[in-house]
Length: 621
Image (cartoon, rainbow, N blue to C red; front, side, top):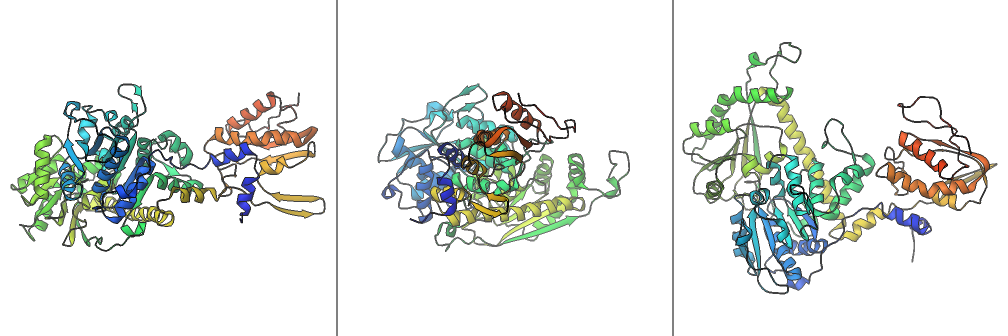
């Protein structure tokens, strides 16, 4: 069997060192179970029948399936299979207004599933038994879990539908606390336990530009802790904890890691299936700019009068611009609406003052808002979806996820725009979905002072599409085989040894640990080295690279394989000269000397600017 030079180099590595290098490859573990393909619901689409075994095999997986790609059916079948395998209780968590979608899907395609909505443990039925037969899946909404009315750990398997809806629960802190409850980290009550055995989540568009959202999902699934993932893949922003920037040398590794536990699918052909019937309707986006009152532009922080109003100056200025322009924006909305007053449409807004203004201008409109009781809120959302009335006024944060409005509605009017791209993008696809028979229209109203906001939305839109395509390309390349992704990463393991000889010199390119291990004892007169600066630089894409480390501690763990070899080959009484960067590196090197590496002399050490510029040396004892 032919073996590549890289594989050969890895195979010759010391067993402990080889294991250390292999541990640098991080893919999501498989914590699930294999299923018999013959047991999969035959009423499901071929693509769905392929996804279910992948998710069950992983046991904790994310389904990022574009709108209309059968997330509902996929989740129901995954939970049914989980009950067949392990028994117990299954839980499907859904946003308000989405519950009926699951009951409709169950009646249409899932004869072996019963659904029951619960919001108290006392309402739960008897646990499922393993093996074939009809299985019961309990449904609840996010608010029930958030408010502590139902403990997720009562369930063997749980799935979160439209998991991105958690953004509306008060910000990132609440988002993480909700997720940690399923993962067994009950922060509210200070308890830690195993968590829900099988965990799944689904959403159409996790924002690839918001990496903290992806890390929260990984933590929910038990793939990797948020803190560990931040350290492994990202640069930190000292001004904002959750503003993350991928290390350039970690980008490919990061997205392959994500693809090991999350499935990004834009269309069936990403998985090798036919796209017939999966063409989304066109969307007609129309921007409507109205004038701003520059006379009310105000002053800057230094008291200087501003010449032009600009919402990008900050939250306060953006809020003032919204308030000043409300009447003009409502007037523009009515002008647009007058093109077809009887059409079914959604009037999207963000502020309560905007809702009140809409209701005043259009008395027949039905509205939903945050403090409205859950029952009338759900009734109105479902009623609009069924075409019972023509106009719904709602916020993207309330109705932007999970709702299917395409049967009767094709028109969206946005009374204003903001910087929350994810909420806007989700809301747009409530009508642009498979099954929509008309061209979808979106009218976005903004002011002259909000031109920067418009540019930002358009920029994020472009970036989203580009990143989503990158993830789909990974799936198209590697499919649903975890081994293929693992192999892709391990192909960068090992170094092809190269040497150049001349008169009085020999230059070798190799893994320095392996090369030094092959050298004779007491054979070197002087060692001069500039060690890669831990996580700061990576000179090659190989995992053998000392710069391909997650932290200073990880870097020194690899150095521990090299340092004894350097000591062994160095002649007695000779020097090893190190060039190091952080204070921690200097302290570590000093400890090595104190622990018996007495031939090592720090004759020249360059450290960070925080230290005095004079070189620091330590005499051999």
